[in-house]
Amino acid sequence: MGKYDKLLLQILRGMSDANIEFDELCHLVESLGFDVRTSGSHHVFRKSGIPEKINLQRHGSKAKPYQVKQVRAVIQKYRLAEEE
Figure 1 (cartoon, rainbow, N blue to C red):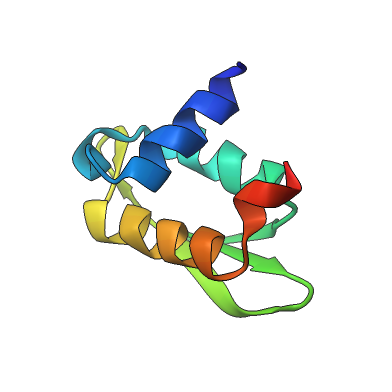
Figure 2 (cartoon, one colour; figure 1 turned 90 degrees about the vertical axis):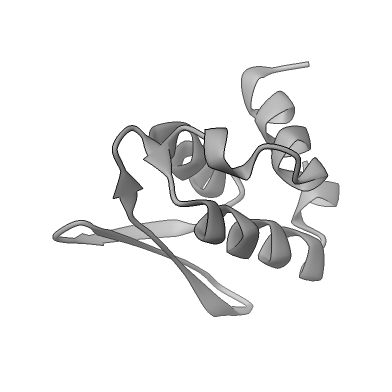
């Protein structure tokens, strides 16, 4: 099991949203096929066929917990974990 597989499972379990590294979350979202556009501190991810956009901001070295929840909701709604 690779690094991003473990991170994906950690996010889907929802047990440690406050302990997700920002850079790792960004790389995971990109590995799921999202394109990133950076504007200042905002990292905005879009993917063709998915109307929602994912907007992430750094909180120190971690991702903000509510944004991790938003990523989890998009992954579950569009079954992105099943494409892996």
